[in-house]
Image (cartoon, rainbow, N blue to C red; front, side, top):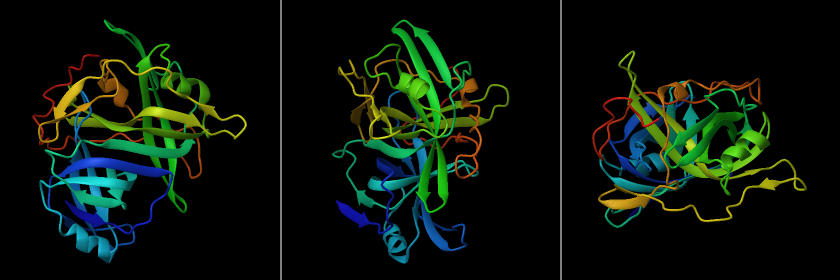
Length: 304
């Protein structure tokens, strides 16, 4: 096992732990200051019925760039306590900082964990199908709620992430209701979840599209110490399903129900007014990356 330690200091409000597979050798690029950096594109294995999530590893310091030069295409890596960023203009997820460890995919498990703390960007409109959707299936009735989380990434910098909760109506761990009932524009919120991506080909235009969210599995509003509201599971989530990935290993998807994704749900959700700094459109990824674990999506005929 080879360990690459990156020196970039991390924000405690934004950490990710990810198993990734690189899809290119590191390349030279330039940051917003026109300073030379190194980047390397990689894929996070999909969870459940989803698709791999493309991210870009970034090294800023000379020390980090020297270590990134040891990374090559098709390496399996584990990123520990990296900082997740989202460039809404480039539609790019990236990770910097933390430790990058080379691992054996046949022995190392798939890890996909994201922790974020920020302020909510929207008042959720229950009548807006892009923000709240109820789904009837042969397994019961389910609800999906989407919110925008505005996360400070250092100094005056903010990134805008879409977070999503999906569970059975009336479930003991009812995170969708937490988002609908307890969050408003400006509500401080701390969430734990995983990156979830879905890809399709738009039927009208034939253009590849994709959407990435932080699918939350735990959440807590942080209004004040005396009124802090915590959602805690009272029972175990039943019957997780296994998905074969990552060199033949398996991982379990947190939910045991169909994951509804339809093209109309991919419209950008507006952020309502300025939330220090002025609000930006909610992130929606674009383009379908090459999938080393199997063929891409041929059409957009999702189960819902």
